[in-house]
Length: 503
Image (cartoon, rainbow, N blue to C red):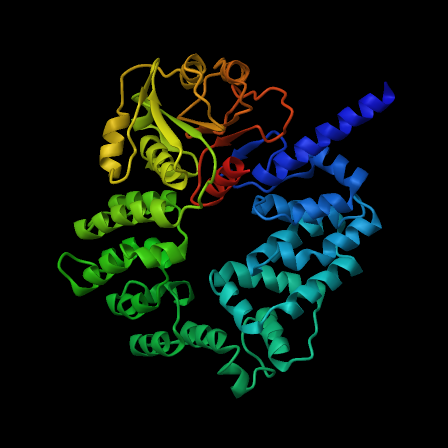
C-alpha cells in the first residue's frame, strides 16, 4: 500500500511539473497578460519533484518548447539549496546559458534566484560566466532594445556578480552598464567597433540639435528605442529611422509613423511600408504569428488617421503569416470549434484588449487550419455547423462564415456532435469568450474519448477572462491530455498551443 501511494505521489508531481513547464501553471492553465511573477507557494508539486529527483528535472527544464518564464523560474528553484541538492544546484547553474539565452532572460532569472536562494558564491560565479560568454556587441544590442529597463536591471546584477574579463572590450562593456556611460576603458577603437552602438546611444542622448540626431541615426543605425522622446515628434527623425526598422518594429511603430505624417495617403513612405508589410520573405523571416498582426491591425485602426492601403497590407500580412510563419503540425487530425454567438463580438481578449474575441478566434483557427492539413473548423451555438476555412479565404469572409448568432453557446456541442458521428480527432480546440461554471465540458470530453476509442487531447481557449472556475479536465493517464488558456497574447500562448497539439 505504501509503495502504491509513493508511486501515485510521484506520478502526480510529474504531471504537475510537465504542465508547469508547458503552461506556467501546475493546473495546466496558461494565463495571458497576468503581469505577475510566478510564486513558490503556487507550485508545491513542482518543488516536491525537484527535491525528490533533482537532475532529471533540470533535464526537463532544458527541453525546447517550454514556457520561457516557467523555465527560468524552474531553473532558479533548481539552483537553490532550499529546494534541491548540491548536485542539482550545480547542474542548474551550469545550464544557465542554455535557458537564459538573452539579456532579458538573465534579468528574470536573477530576480527569481535572488529571492529563492540569495546571492551566494555559486550564483555570482554562474552569472559572471554568463556575461563572459556573451559577445559584447550582441549584448549591447540586446540591452538597447529597452535601454532604460535593461540598463537598470543589468546594473543591479553587475553590482552583485562583479564579473571580470580579460578582454578590454568586455570590461569596457561592464563599465558602461555600471556607470551609465562609456568610461576610460572604452578606447577610441573599442567605441568604434564592439561598443559602437552603445557609443551612438550615448551621443544621441546628449545631442542638442535635430541635425545632430539625424546624423547619428544614419551613422550608427540607431533604433527608435534609443532615441530620446523629445525628438520623436519630428517626421524627419522617423524618416531617418524607417530604413533601419525590423519587421516587428515596423508593426509596432506604424501608429507613430502615421501620427507624425510620414505615412500618409499617396506618400512614398506609405508605399514603402505597404511593400515591406506584405512581403512574404520578410513575414516568414520575422516569424510573426497571425495574432500579433491582428493586434497590429486593431491598434493601427484605433490610433486614428489610418492609411487604408497600409491596413490592407496588414491584412495581407496576416494571411502570409498564417501560411509561412506558423509552425507546421504534422500527422494530426484537428477539430477547431469557434463560439459563434453574439457575445464574441462585444468581448475583448484578455492579454490583447484591443482585439475583439471574434477576430482572435477566427485568426487562431485560420492559423491552425494552415498549420495542419487535416484541420476541420466548425462554429457552435446550441448546435454545430461546419465552416469552410479553405485556401484563399480572407479574414472578413471567415468572420462572416462564423457569424454572430443571438443565442447562448454550448461548449459541449462540438464534442457531442463528434461523438455521435464517430469522427476521430487527435485533438480538439474549443474557442469561446467565457466558460460557464457548470459547462459539463470534462464530461463531454470523456464521453467523446470513450465513444470513439481515440485518446484525443483537449485545449480550451477562453478569451475574455482569467476566471476558469468552470474548467476541470478531470484525471487522465497523460498530464498533457488537456490544457486551458485564459486569454491570449502575441506569441507565447500560440507557441504553447502549437507545442501541445504537435506532441
